[in-house]
Length: 292
Length: 269
Image (cartoon, rainbow over all chains, first blue to last red; front, side):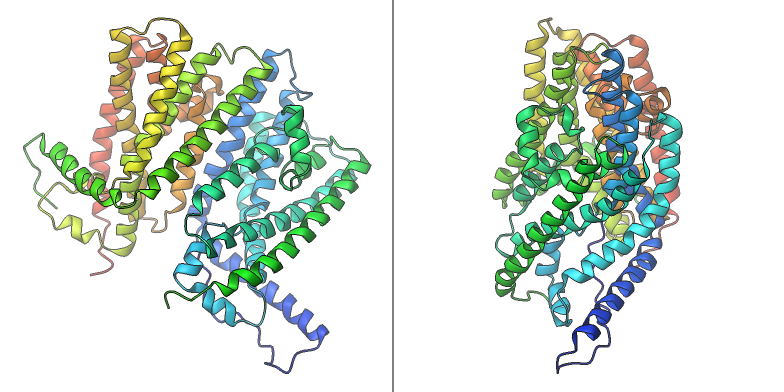
């Protein structure tokens, strides 16, 4: 994953203080996002081979789960936990798109930002640094999705998924994948900022990644998990980034569940955003530009 | 390029020498040992949870019982530990050297360049996984309740070595690609993703994938075949195939290394 935060002068040519009016500020922010997105597309499209390697590794994961659970479903007379092999195929192929949407700035990237002083340049810009990450990784998605389409086509031919969504499923899915992106972005920003306090971040990150793997619907559909694990997952943000968008499209949710899910996503985005603001205030005081 | 040495033990001696230096270097960072134990424990717990989840829904997976799958899992961790300790660090270093042009320093040394690039870096704390893998294997063998005799043990050791060699060749072939495609860092994530498939016996995968995981990425030889040796499933044909394929891929890697080197043009110097 690219950790490089290019140091080019991306800051929009907004005039320095006196403070700009709210409208000008919003327009500046939109322009900044568009520029970040364009930059990411140009930047990442250079590395098609590298991106494809990354995607092959990424696709291996759901294919393994899919084969294992389809095998079990067939052994159990055609279904397990309410899933047939075709439904597992749909679940895990949609999974690949959701996983791509969930690529965000890795918490491990903070070490480089802090140790090499990259953050200093970001602090000079007149806007919060999270906007660059949100814009850049949103732009990367366009490259990734273009590269993903042939992979999805091949997987569809190989595993014949049973996918028959209603229009509302598609609509909710289209919103929910961006909701998932935002939830994951803000949560892993908070997690990454732990690096301001300690350099031994690996164990903390791995613990969170493991909890996410098990309790998000990434490993298996949550309905296959034991009851206590499902109840645990209900109070954590993870399932709104994997299980919910996937199940929205594969058509396992009622309309109330679909809209309620979007509301839960909005709630977690709000909680995460507040978390980013609060932690950032304390974290940045500990920053002492080591490096350049 | 270095003049090829006639001394067959020389690569092993170089390996021992670099290993000592690497170990001394890593021993400075003892806290990393604790971190590695913690991370290995998390990975082990996750893997066991997945196996538990599978067997909460079924009693056997394509003819493999729970202890047998545990044995596969043990070999997977063990081989993963070997890869993480010995193979992967060297390949990542090679990739960086090609990109930065610092491979010059290897090529000017009076040793075989392929041997040198393969023995320079070690992550000894990763060997925790090798030990965890052996413990899991031990538990699995105890649960199997069938004696594992001398023949099985020898076959297991042999197939493990062959599998490790094949993984090394596979990694090196990919890394040699860096001579053409300069930015290759995503390869690590690709390999780690694909390697996860070895957690299950390759026989559960559909044909096209099974063949890919055998001959394209030799995970079947590295994990499933040693596990078969231990659970008395190994046929002489499979063993012969493993030996033959290992010889073939070793020879190819040797040729490909020399071929790739011609593309190298020290960018730094």
